[in-house]
Image (cartoon, rainbow, N blue to C red):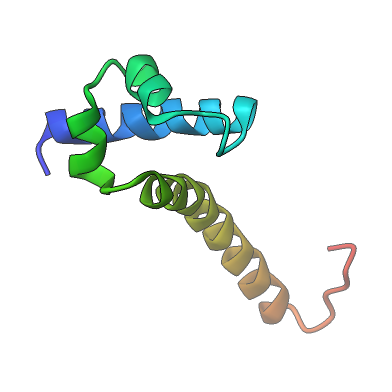
Length: 87
């Protein structure tokens, strides 16, 4: 993926996340997302294919990082036999 594709995709994800948070999935249009990301509708379709795929990518972006932290915390607890919930 080229640097320009990366930044375009990230701009779309950032704009979509903000608009979905503010207006909800149904309340935010792809046109609003494209305007906020300063891209055309073809860019959203190229990178994500649909609004449903876009919201999935927004969630995945956040959940992958959260899941990595969860796994790290779980590994730490499992490595300490006397660990408690307070740890």
